[in-house]
Image (cartoon, rainbow, N blue to C red):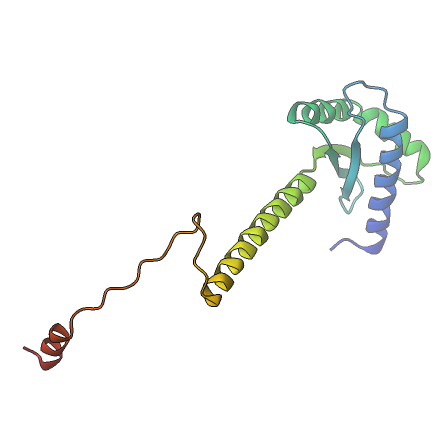
Length: 157
């Protein structure tokens, strides 16, 4: 668990990088909808993982990450002039896919909820005695064996 000071530094670096990327980085490969989602700095402040989210297709994401990695020296220099830290960390830019994963999970949850509601409606119709619709399969009724067979097996014959 990072200390309070380290959390503050992470947030400060995240905010400054967001401003720098949106206003100072002039590389055309950097997608307009790029945001810094998190920064994880090592306890000695020598290294920082910078998680960046890019709203775009895979190619745009790859190009943006490459451009930001190329601009890491410039970003570090700008951070040094803006922050009062003894050591400005080396920046390791990584693609943050948590937003995409979250969206995928939400789609799956919506799909499950829809299927659950459809199943609930089917159970309610069956409980009311309505015939199921044509797209709902009817469950076959179990076939009961004749009474004479049951009696012979019960008697042990």
